[in-house]
Length: 505
Image (cartoon, rainbow, N blue to C red; front, top):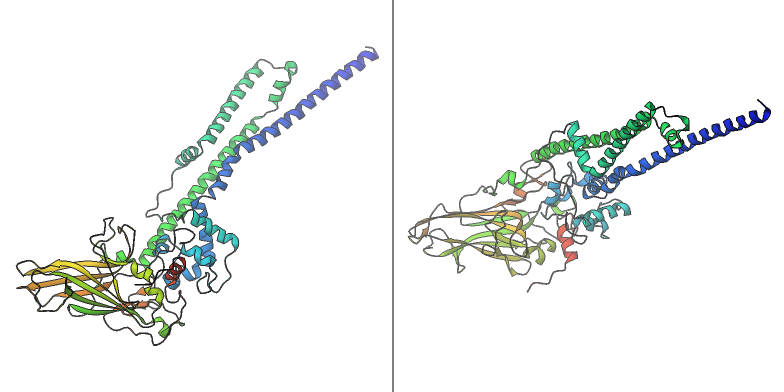
């Protein structure tokens, strides 16, 4: 073989070797590009978590973080200053001692947001601490704009689903992406079948560059894709298991809260009937409403009177009725008079507050209250109010009984169809003989108002007789503090700031 032939052969082998190396490098680059494409294609699976962070549920998680950091110390399970507790939906919706809910509403009416941005040192929260950061306030703002979403606390924990159920749920949740993976698996299987058949037909190095490229793809590459698929769904299953554990924990906490913190309905029943005060049957009684706030800065530590209720039986003409009086054929009423205690804050007796108070027989019904709706009338500006609630008439034969229960409520819709808070119940049991009110007739009033500050004897709780009783409660001897939070009128302060009310006629 001459030198030219040797040289030509060497060049041919070098070109062929260089071509094979170039093909291998090209295959590697394509493989890397394919992997990057796969990562980009599956990125929406991870991106969904980021989008969910903007949902109401994810936003509420941030609100819980803010509450834990800045609110629970004074408004959590161990302490409820002002009667406000923010570690559960049930307690937060109950509001503070005023009974007004402070969650929900818009940026103007939401009590939590307004407290965070207030410039009034007596009103802004957290009290005696640095204001929340701008980012946290913005988080609360976004939460309020979304309607203050607060997931319901589960009544019963559900069993965690099985592996196949979780996979099926995950596939249903991400159906589009699951179809992409399924299509990819079909392509992989089809490719392996094709390559297997080509191998059996003795595919040679001279068969072209495309088969050589395909030959560089190994089963391990397919395994990486499948492993990524499995890891994703395992992580999804793990998140679901954590969610189930959180639900179970929330259920136990809810049961514990209900056991430790009774509600109005758990104490008084449905519909609620108040406990009768321990006094003899009478047709005229006086009751004293006290303050449910306790603080060393308040006079007498907070134990003082805020109002006096006077109950009487009367006819529709306004004549007071006593035992032995004739009532034959008369339409009867129960008169409720409320006298403001000396030096009691104007916030507790503002026009806005008093105009939202009414009497009704209905309890939590969507019925129209137009025919069963009686409000106080002011008979001495910001000092005395009175209302006559009709209860019916005695049978024509002049002998029989007349019994019933109605409520003193606060808050109603424009159509007078909903009562928000039931503060007191008024019970009457009248006996008539020969047209005369007989001995044993009874008219009394009991409290249905319940907050974390009130308890039947318990250390560091306000005794019930200091909140509502037929015996006198001490009155203030001089002007009291004007701090809305200390006197339990912060919601009324917010309402006054938001909607200045006109003066009474």
